[in-house]
Amino acid sequence: MTLIAWHHNTMRNLEPSEGLAPFDGSQADQVWRFHRSWPGYRPTPLRSLPALATNWGLKTVLVKDESERWGLKAFKGLGGTYGVGRYLGKYYGIEPPGDFLTLKNHFFRKRPVIFATATDGNHGVGIAWAAKHLGHTAKIYMPRGSAPARVEAIRKVGGEVKVTALDYDDTVEWVAAGAEKQGWVLMQDTSLGDGNQISQWIMQGYMTLMAEHFLSNTDSPCDKPTHVIVQAGVGSFAASVVAFLANLYGNEIPRVIVVEPTAAACLYDSALVGDHKLYPHPSPQPTVMAGLACGVANPSAWEILRHWVTTFAACDDSVTARGMRILGNPLQGDPRIVSGESGAVGLGLLSLVMERPEYAQLREELELGAEARVLLFNTEGATDPAMYRRIAWDGYLGEFQPGVSQPPMPTAGWTE
Image (cartoon, rainbow, N blue to C red):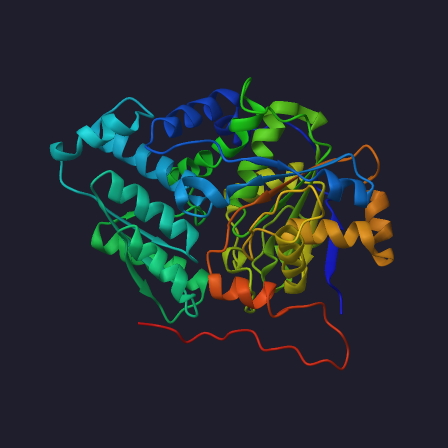
């Protein structure tokens, strides 16, 4: 069984393009200033794992830990607040991007807005939380089989949530059609091929997590990494990170490895073809990485990723389970990091590449050696506590062993 498949990007050209402009330093600083105006804002930590780096023969391993963002347990609140904020600023006629109090004080000047989105959980929490804080309503739709804990998290922050009988990609299309018919505002972080301005605002919102350390003079600024490992679902977050780095470093951008679940690896599939076109993943299968379970990527994100990413990788679910266990059970002196299923796949990949002889070729090709400074992202905490315990306590999704039965993947069916 192949745990990791990889393909070095033959489309990479490192040439500036119009697609990078919305993610330059001035835009990132504007987004960051907007987020600093929100109640309870504080930068999330950039955690160093020196014992782990030494164990693997690397110079540094750094993890941007988004599990503490606004108490929402995920980075998605950044895109939700900025997307909702920019839309309302335009709706109210406020000079962008405005700030929290200005938007809040304009609530009574126009009719309330209904925001709608499809989500695996974290994005919906961010949209519902932002809408509620600014006095508006969010209708959130989730794919079949969504974890009850993630449904309840959306309700807890004030969202109206329904679980559909569809998979994620079909739920996105269904909500888009419904929002147009009902006059709701669609807050999706994929453009659906139409160049949607809102999807760009959401992508821009993610830049705050980079700005907090790369543009800061006081809050533990980050040295330039040599390698960046970033996970991808529809690719919007990955593209935001890559565009920020491309604007910051130009053709001296670090090596970027984009990681997806094997069950829904549309970016990896498209990179394999290598003709610059974006292809959907055929028949996406269930994956424990719910936040990355997307068979259709964001075309706007692909336009950035195909030019700047070094390597695309697809990982078995056991890879992220391994990453979760390593982060949650650190070597002596390293901090413990609680990472959910979509947050740990990058660390899981790195662990296998550094430890297993079957990945020595990839390790050498990526030059992961004594001078390597690796940056990763824990994009979520334990957003599904039951699954977290199943993996961490019970060994669910341990590495495949021939002749050893594996508990079945939870199936769809929890609906209302």
